Image 1 (cartoon, rainbow, N blue to C red):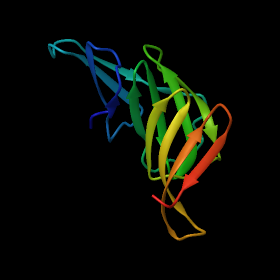
Image 2 (cartoon, helix red, strand yellow; image 1 turned 90 degrees about the horizontal axis):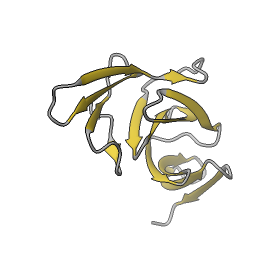
Image 3 (cartoon, rainbow, N blue to C red; image 1 turned 180 degrees about the horizontal axis):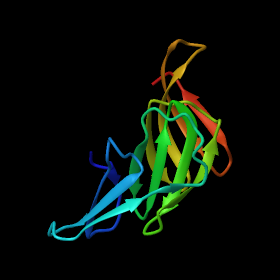
Amino acid sequence: MLAQLQGRNDAHKIYLGNYTAPLILTSINLDLKDVEKHRIELEQSNFNFRAITIKVFEDEFYVYDGNVPVIFKGCLPNYRAEIVSYNKAYFSQLVPLGNNNFAIKTHSSTLNQQVLGLVNTTTDAVILKNDI
């Protein structure tokens, strides 16, 4: 699985995730010769994850599972990730936007429909937009 690259990340590497070992991030240089496996260490790992996802954005990576309302952030090439958001929102999709902002797709129990949300991990703000 491609670790869902976005932005300007390390221009000389491709990052791959692993469905069977979701906390292993593999980096490969562009000539496909140097392959390195990195174990991501989570600040806290006692969550009941169902489907961990890793996204690389510029020089940072994010680890999340929207079934558990937590987002971890780490900086490459250090593979330790710390919690930047906890118990703010459940979501089915997440896109890092930079500056501690994320777009999420979530379900509004009030409206019983999918909505777009913005999460800011600096202010802990969660804004939901249902009229798009």
